[in-house]
Image 1: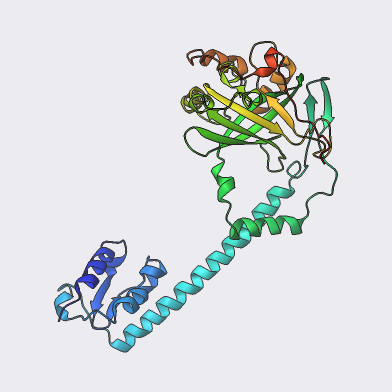
Image 2: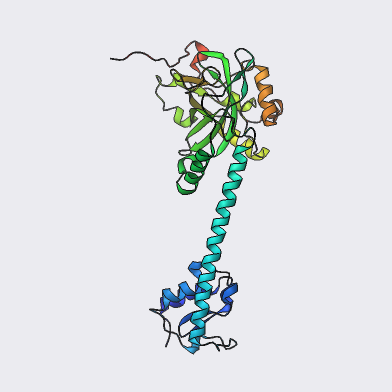
Length: 349
């Protein structure tokens, strides 16, 4: 008697996996000659394979290797399989429980360390040069909240958040008051090769606050933007070439390639929370713009950013002189020609 063609194909595949060499075929299916040390996962275990193929596979001594001895009885084989299955399940269960407990303890320890749960800090307010407290009102996160967040992280999908991966840091200006400037940490996600969005945070820490969003499009797409819409968009070329925009942690070659790709793009950025002014997201959103020439950004703000990230804007600028400056398309950077706009809350009927 012989195995069905489908069963032979599947068993041939498993026979090449690590650990299968200790398993032999018998009249009852696969039986493991050393069940206590089998290195296969449950789905590949002799028990699983036996259940899967027992109904369709018929075995004979023709499929046994001549150098293997089969002296065990069917009762002994069944006993070994039961012991293998039981011990494997219990071991895996304890590993899962132990891993979960260890991860939970590590998570709580890290969250409760000083400075990890401060929900803010003092930062430089570029308009006045004074340090301001950016902590919003409210109680500090407690253990119950942390456990709930940890459980959600384990059980729920966070695909949209995981899509925002590339971290960039920059200095942005308020459209109606360029002297008002903020340091932003952005996380970029690609909608496609020509359209991206960037989530703007006030820091790169675990307690960072979402303060706005930036949409980025390539030069090719911007050419199709209506004239009436272009006044909301700003060019990114100068911020890239001057070193004001950096990608913390990336090797130089990767960062240089990223900045070369971002140089000929345009962005529309909106801030919903002015941390340097309000303890909560009050009022209408603010349109943000990127610097376009030297002398616009306060030197003290650049120094603060460089010190925090361990970067040098001057060196970044020097290394990016080979990045070409694209020609500015009409309508962008309207604030430079007296066409600055800003959002306002107006009554509606």
